[in-house]
Amino acid sequence: MLIDQVPIFVGFKPATPLREDQYPKAQAALVKALNEQWKGKYRIVAQRFYVFAPYDRRTFPQWVMLQDFVGNYFRDEVKGEKEYWDITPFPGPAATVWKLGDQRFAAAEAGSALPNGGALCGYFQLEKE
Image (spheres, rainbow, N blue to C red):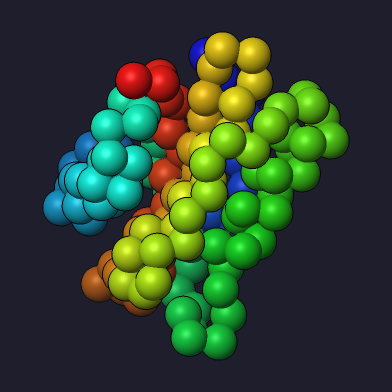
C-alpha cells in the first residue's frame, strides 16, 4: 500500500502513528471534514494519524511544511501527480491528494488545535469513487 511507502514527516511528534484511543473525537472529526470536502470523490481505505507539536497556528503554518515534504516525495522520488488540493479557510482541513499509478494518497491537517495546542495530521490511503 502507498500509505506504507510515504515517509513520516519529521515534524510529527511522536513520529509513530497515534492509537485509535488517542484523540478519537479529533480523528473522527478530521475524517468527517475530509469526506465533506471531497464530496464523494474519494473513499478512505487506510489511515494513520500524527501530531504536530504545539505552535502558534496564526503565524507558523506547519501544514505548509507537511504538504511540501509529501509533495517533494511524490514529485521527486516516485514521480506521482497532484490530483486534488484544497486549503479550506481556517478552521477547515488542509488536504492534498496525490496519485501514483492507480493508487491515491492524501496528507491532511485538522483545522482546529488539540487540547495540548498541537495539530492533528493524517496520512490516508484512498480509492477514487
